[in-house]
Amino acid sequence: MSAAEHLLVVVTGPGEARSLIEAEVAHPQLSVLDVGVTRGDGIFETISIGAGHPQALEAHLDRFARSARMLDLPEPDRDLWRDAVQTLAARLSEHEEAWVKTVLTRGIEGQPVPTGWAYGTVSPAFRRERTEGIDVVLLDRGLRSDAPATSPWLLAGAKTLSYAVNRAAVREAQRRGADDVIFVSSDGQLLEGPTSTVVLRRGDVLSTPPDDVGILPGTTQADLFAAADQWGLRTTIEPLTPDDLGDADAVWLVSSVRHAAPVRSIDGAARPVDTPLTAAMNGFLRARRS
Image (cartoon, rainbow, N blue to C red; front, side):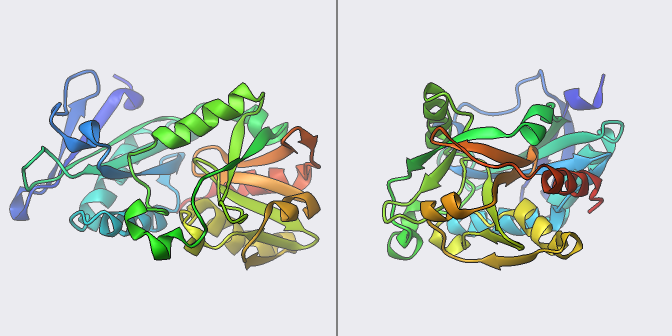
């Protein structure tokens, strides 16, 4: 059986009950009473695996714990989840690009023990998106940029299992002849993609919006910004608007699995693609070993 056909179940019981159990993907694993299924009440992370090496693993574990706190879930056992990811990564080591998803739910309705598992598989090919670029549309998310402060119960900025809105946004983009979405707040702030972080270049500066506007802290964006000086670039995290997209020399949507996808059009208007920098970014991201 190939590595991609395996599932690693993470049992997050109390105390000494914590352990890893390997299971078959094709066999039933999850109760129909689990609120991760019935209510979308849970969190997840997707970690890129490069030739068996988890990439930005500690940053993903940080964000996993942050989301758990926002949902009042038990603090994830960091060592246990790290072991789960590394175990799957080792089984996927023959593949140049793969990914592992970690999931933690509130568990069975009315029970005190959460449910957790991790699974991994080989990444799809993203050559077209990384080289030719993607077409995006701007969509209103329907929340103000100060929603995390005024309405924390909306969980803006948590990576939850409640992804129906994100998937609906992508379908709307496809109905408009595009590939993906950049969300805008109702008060005009640039936010993020449904599964990605917005990065733009103006001259020698890379910019991205701050996470206090209700977006996920981007692990891929953070790695790119840490490497920016090798490309002669400076970085800034600052509030941005759709006008900044129009003024940019290049725009990307960056994420753990697809990496850096250059934006070639926004709402049907063609945008320049920085082919050399895109290639450098994706080369750097594929080569990461931690």
